Length: 54
Image 1: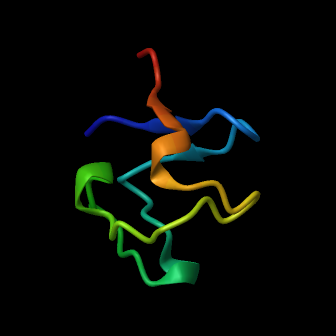
Image 2: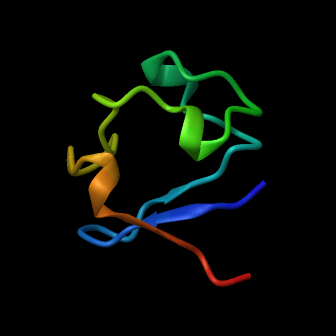
């Protein structure tokens, strides 16, 4: 699964890990995150994320 980087603070969403502290279980693809999900570090919205170059 593709990882995504926050363009504001550089935090990386890794679907293998999810965001369990905010109710997102492991193996959740970025595309399936709720529309109101935000970066756990800087609170940027999903629109402020870009695919990581692998």
